[in-house]
Length: 553
Image 1: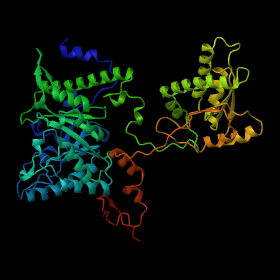
Image 2 (image 1 turned 60 degrees about the vertical axis):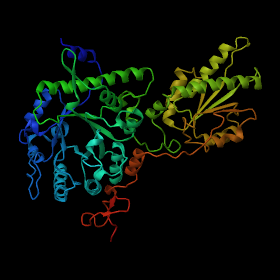
Image 3 (image 1 turned 90 degrees about the vertical axis):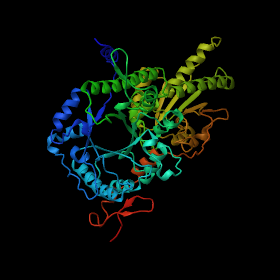
Image 4 (image 1 turned 180 degrees about the vertical axis):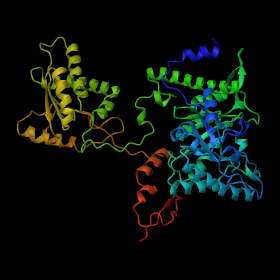
């Protein structure tokens, strides 16, 4: 077994595998009519998908000339099954298209031809279209994409690639432009009205030369806040080392890719920037090296997650990854009943419950001094949910009894648990019977009615009130409405846990939150389909750069 195979065997138990693609170029030949054979050949070399010009390689490799006519779009869709197109192929705008070219004839031609390819993308069963920024400022391209995204039923996402070598985006006319690559992308994103990242994302093309911003972690980690979906890795970056001539990445490129690759949904692409056809053995080494790198990241992430270190860990190894980068509508636990899964997620906050148990221990010690050893201590758990805090109360009682060996009798708290969710009551009754020895009095109802029941003599007033209605840190979803309703039944010596809290407002800036709130607030054309004139009136550009249908009778 060769060294490469041995390393692969060592990580064969990795739970998550990466998908790596090949960017097709003219050096591989024109395969517009034999996509199936080309895909199969790449698959045999361990590639999972390919990036291919949506108009065909013949059209993409055309050399533009003034008054010239580019080849027509000619990439027949019947070559592959609809599902296979979306699985194994992502589209690409023809390489010569440059909507912001200095030559006006090329810019005008590009603006016309890119519309044709965007239209054909809508017809093809593809999920992703890639293109590359060729200038520091690309207003015409941004205008076309913005209008397209806002006014068409776009079924695919657009990935915009930028080079990591700032010299490939030179400053025009020796002017002053202090923006780095991230700044150029941020401006382009703004020109596209910060369109939601589900449809407009960014990719980095890793060049042999790295700009300074990609050498300093504090700078390149800004990309974590962007919809960074792909890395296009040029083959000229790879170097050979060791007795087997195995491909490796230079240290700077290796660290950059390891730090910015944060999720398996990101798609690395390998791109040959040579005019000669790539040797098949090298093509295999390239993909194996990138997959090995990602396996190393997965192994490190798995080990870090086991010890609770979330720094630079793949999203897939973080708990509840379905909630990562997901905007959740606010819960309404007062008007709605939470489901068991939501309770289970809340209960995973072990630090919070450990601190509750510690606080309850201190409260019990103080109450024993106040009420004396002969009196019972009445404890209410309000908003019990599935009972995690009741478990903490009972454990605190056990800890107190273990420390108080000189008492004549063991302390036995008088326990009451109140919950309005009838479904959670089933869980509480089960735990009371099998875990708590039926010593908890379970009250089904709204805690705002508890005051009436206590005043009517149905239940005693509390010595200790425990609740987690304030939620975790930064969450005051139910305060003070519910807890205020019991203030008139408290004893002068009653202790409440928590005792106090502070509400505050902190302004934040987040492109991701802005985009996702926009999607939830009806800011797209889909919510305008009932308007009069739909299908007859053209969308109108608004002051903020977005588009909307005029409301005309």
